[in-house]
Amino acid sequence: MLDKPESFQTDMSHRDGVFISTYGCQMNVNDTERMYSLLEMVNYEPVNTPDQANLIIINSCSVREKPVHKVHSEVGRYRKMKEANPKLRIGVAGCVAQQEKKRLMEDMPIIDFVIGTDAIDQLPDVVGRVRDQGEKLVSAKFEHGKPYQIETLNRNPGVSTFVNITKGCDNFCTFCVVPFTRGRERSRSYAELVADVNTLTQRGVKEVTLLGQNVNSYKSVEGYDFGALLKGLATETDIQRIRYTTSHPKDFNRELVQIMQDHREKICEYVHLPVQAGNSEVLERMNRGYTREEYIEKAQMILDTMPGATLSTDIIVGFPGETEQQFEDTLSLLDIVPYESIYAFKYSPRPFTKAARWEDQLTEQEKSDRLQRLFDKHNEIAFGMAKKYEGQSLKVLVEGQDPETEKYYGRSTQNKTVYFEGTGDLTGQTVDVLIREAFPQTLRGRLLL
Image (cartoon, rainbow, N blue to C red; front, side, top):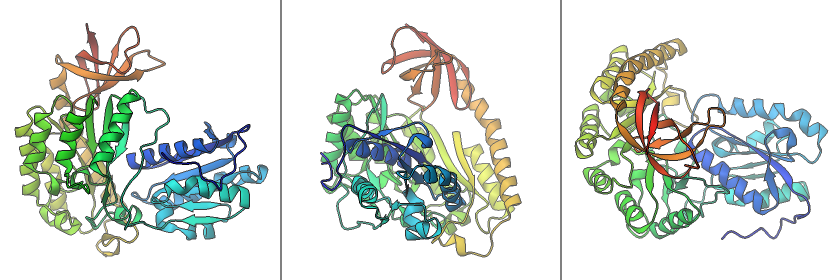
């Protein structure tokens, strides 16, 4: 267990408020929960709005464009609060903090501390020194040589929660800043993860989502790969459901899919398989490590090995040098691979990446046009694919009840959000729901008794 830092002297009769503003991926969401848990140990309590806080942290993301501008803008909104409240301390965490480091405080002197993605566990000590000694601190060094050992911290994990299994990335895709903001890839130990999930199930968690920039490149110090980890969690813990994100096509193999099929009673039949582009030349410039044809073969292998599995993907449009014909190849991929959902973005240059230095950048208008065309095409396909669920009975893990409609909601094994009416307390139960209406992302149905 983590100990309270000796340097942090707390007055247990008073609890200060902390507000954390979070941007970006599920890794950041999970990091925010970890920060709240660490600060709770040293007598901070979460508050709903920044004006209630004596500590504000911006947990930033640098994957999309203009992330530093967002941090500047948000910090600017807190200037008057700090003038009115001399006890208020402001910090920046996350990928922008890792990327910009001390430049953030040089540009915005009202910031009191900056912590990088490897320094989250130092947060209580950093906050204590800032608060009690009036220091201004930057803690943003990578700890490449140390094992990746953390304890999953979650104040109220609920029915479903996230578990980090890897951090960082070694792929160096030419568009991606993650290796520079999250560091080189490291994996947690197999034994630690099994123990972690067992502890969460004892706290009432029914489902875990395994997190990493590239989960299927997981390799533990004990020699377990990702497939072995999935099998171990399915057989050595009482967790009811296992999900994961995000996987890399080049590391996806038949053995992994067969393990998913063999343990389908626990491992969800949903695979998020980012393609990024549907043209082999663009994929090569992206340094993705596979061709269009190889990707299609792997997608088909998943569907053949796991009948009824669902796929989703990430796509970047307007990559430097992307021609109209190359974009058409991406569009045509939607006719071949049955993606039930896509997450698509316009390319934006990121600091330190190769693609940001290339001269053949597309205009914003070209990128916006292609993004809209991609969404239009997928919408035509997705509504048709969703109709197959109508009349089906799906097993839904109930996550809660909507306070306005009083309808229960949860997710199916296909990662569809399902709404239905029910009586009693169904939260945490797995129930059968007959689907009456189906849309690309949500389903509506009737509880089967």
